[in-house]
Length: 390
Ligand SMILES: [Zn+2]
Ligand SMILES: [Zn+2]
Image 1 (cartoon, rainbow, N blue to C red):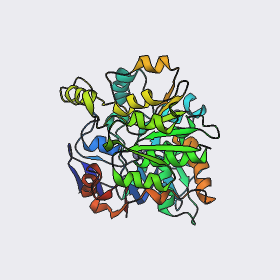
Image 2 (image 1 turned 90 degrees about the vertical axis):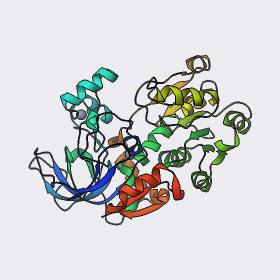
Image 3 (image 1 turned 135 degrees about the horizontal axis):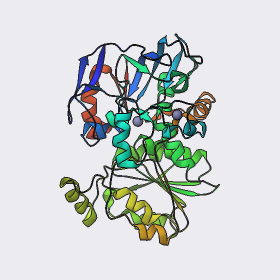
């Protein structure tokens, strides 16, 4: 079969690889019909996540049709049209039973688990196509994928919901939604969202769905700000200087009730701290560049919440702990518990409350994905979200 294969930093290729097969009775094989590139795939593209090996198959946002199901599968069967949730969870360990699916104890192999435990204290759930640190499972930017624990990770999609409407339930929609839910929004709140990529856009949409009165969107890319404005957000363009006084002005000097950092570790900082981050990052003395996170903490109102769906991988410097403590902020973060949200959000899509396809800017074929990585990485050609159909 054909697949998008990682061969090194900024080196994605279409290659012919062996078809996957069932290796565990809980597996299913999915024939992919649609797959997307995620912002977090760019961390792999740019060689920032350790544990990638040449030959690894990319992709964790995909859906398709089940063409084979292991003997232990009870909820899904051959012929089902499904989305596949991007993290792999067993559904039966202590964490899965608490609805903390991304903390699953059973899907990260011992070899990867040892590295994660060294770095993080404990290993969590694996991800499709996201390095050997996260289990080394082959991803879905391919014609076929092996899906472990298929009963838990596959969610059937009714025929009247299109691929484009369902695909983002695998990752970015639940991620934006949980980020907004973590803000404990009450009617009339003002929410500020740093980053207007796909997760930021879904965070904006979800904040309104959960009762926010005003949403402020901060970014430095015109197309992203335009899309945020179309959704009803007030936009703040980072290219026009320091964003903090402008956000202060928009909230009567009080600051937003909650701030969402949908940027993560690859922020492009400006000013003295931006230079500091670039130097320390280049010298490998800092793994992550936390410009958005620092701004989020500095601009949030006293007693407010900073919610962090943006991905961080390691250590950060100049974290304004004094400001966070002095203002009594609540910090909430982490990998989304996708399985908790996919079905309820699918119901909202079915009910016509939201059409998630609004973020798609580029529609391509599987063969075009290596080139599309470069376009997306450069934020060229107005690129916000790439979807490939097979
Ligand atoms: Zn993703
Ligand atoms: Zn589990």
